[in-house]
Length: 191
Image: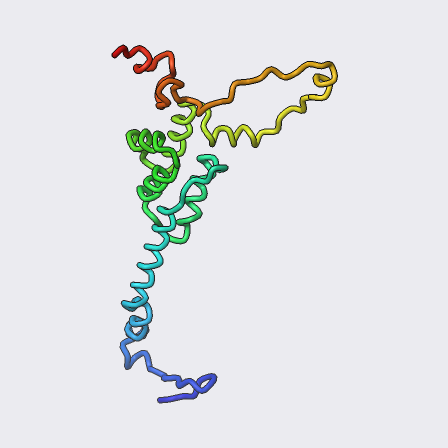
């Protein structure tokens, strides 16, 4: 019972009564294509390698100097979007990639549950320590009101000299984060 199908393929006509009805036909289709649906060992290894590279790409991503924490969070998500990477990997990558040792330490202590919580915690910690690099870049992105500097110069007024700004949030005495000079333990230390 062979028939020529389109393009030279052989058509087999199975009478449903002889083969056991529609269920036998369905069983035959599943059996004949089971080898196609199961991934081979090599294909499985390729998928595992691609997933490992995606995780490595996420873990290697570091926060750039001009990025805010929210932009960094989105960049991490984009780096791992091709595979379903577990949330703890994103959190570890975020904490390790913020770039500031003090902030990394504080984020590890806070143990954020997910990437969103880690980003929000980083913003709060940075603001509590003062204006760090990310906050300054956020302020630079905002448009400033135009201040006419020329009339001041014409009248002979000079701008008062400002002291150069140090790392905001660090002590002027011992240069450590977490306190200011008025509260520095080394200031009152008398040997």
